[in-house]
Amino acid sequence: MKHTLESGLQLHYEYKTAKQARDNTRTLVLIHGMGFDLTSWDRIIPYMEDEFHLLRYDFRGHGLSGTDSIDLSGLAWIYVEHLDSLVCRLGIESFDIVSHGAGCIIGLYYTKVYPAKVSSNVMLSLPLFNSSSTASKYADYRKNLLKHQSMSALAGHVIPNATLFQPGTPEMDKLYAAFSKVTFDSYIELLDFFAGAHDEIMEMFKAHTGSLLLLTGERDPMYPPYLSGLIASANPNCRFMTVYNASNMLFYDQPGETYKQIRMFFDSEKSSRLPLDPYLSELHADFIGLVNGDVQPQTLPLQPVRTADYAEDSADSAVPSVRLKVSLLTSFQVFVDETQVLSGWGRRRAKELLIYLLLHPSAARDQLCEDLWKDMEQTKARNQLRVCLNHLKQLLNNEETQLLYSDNQQIMLQGPLECDLLDLLENTRLAVKETDLVRKNDLIQNIFPHIDDPLFRHLDQDWNLNLRTRLEIDLVALAHYQADMLAKLGKYTSAIACLKYVILFNPEEYDTYERIAALYELNRQKREAKAWRAKWAELQPAKEPTAK
Image (cartoon, rainbow, N blue to C red; front, side, top):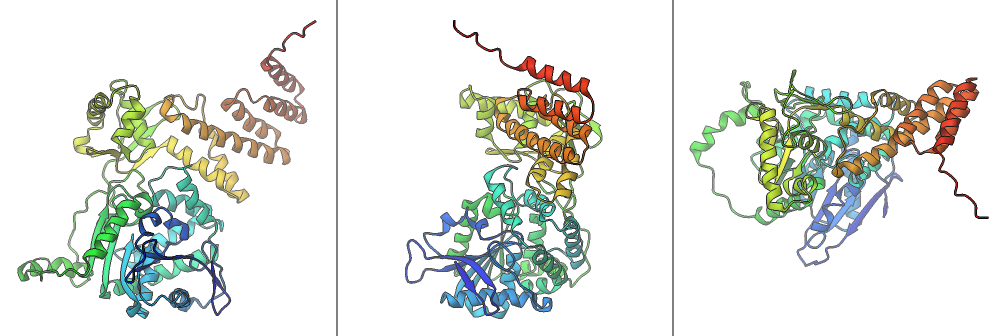
């Protein structure tokens, strides 16, 4: 549905009444994050729609909403008035705001202007740092990714760090589709504004007196739990909770658990709390003063963030002291910091288990057992996993490095991680999605030099067959695309080199042999053209003799 503002700008929105509506049914206004749109709430909507009226919309410059020229000095208030115009049209007099990322900031400004309309604020991954200089640093990094005025490079940084879903999944594709709709100018305007207004936003958060819940994802590398916890402590009215096994978009990774925390917050917000013991209040006064900037900071020990998707450029991240580096495209090599782990990989499926964990940032034990020991009874498979996991922990010296985290339900790698296969997967995905020709060419040129035969020498198990197939399809498509572009430019030798990658991945793609031969002829290399046509002839299936 569309709502037309006085300026003529149209806002796209969806409003649904609760399936089990009552007289006192609450309305939730869902505000998405920067770069996303109202579809980002799709996974949590089924948990909310029975008991709540739901309004979600694409704010200006995002999704299916329009954009226009505005006075940037009043940017925040423009977004506030857009939302207020929408709720007034729908006759919504009071509501709760559930917001993600930059949407939290819009919610804060709205609550400041219209406090009587907002019953409570639920903030998912509030994008605040410990200082405005850090906010500006991260904003500059994101703007640098936009230097070609293409949203693809930025999406390639934000989305893999916002969710635990794997590249190529429908869940990831939906997020990339949302990013592709964002106008370049709208994103830059918001980015510059939020960085410049960081201190003002922090003061608004501190002064917020209404019901307030801040939720963070346990594996969020952009605004990790220790940072969000520190921010939350700046407001004594703020309740804070970490959602396990989730990244920045915790409502996307763990919609059921996120809804559970929101529901518990609503159910308990009116319950009376005992006043804090005066001694305990005094005991924590120094820390609260530190957060509010009243005292000079002392050195605070920061715990390493558990994340397999640690972003090196993410500001304010506590970097674990140990880095894991794994090579899979050529020879299999594992380094813990600069020390290579040479032996033990051929025993107790250590190599396969490590590769599985690289490709599955958070592996459920039962699924892992099903994939690696599919023909084994579950109890025996779990015992096998326990033995193999202990062996892998010994190889990685896990008591000291803490590279592996495990509990009764899941296993995950944590800390900074480098892997050439993961880089190839990500670069391939970006190249396939890229529409800017220059950027696409740069990405492709960074892909094929790293490919060697056999590409999947370390990926020959049943459980990774789908991954191999998808990657081969994407690489073949990119090779054909690049060969076409190079041939049009008369760069026949380079075009032939690209097509040879097609043969490497799929030797039975017979038309490619003829294409290579034709390019050799254009390049005046008739002998090579003849040789490739001979190869093509040898591969043709023998014809059945005709019946007399």
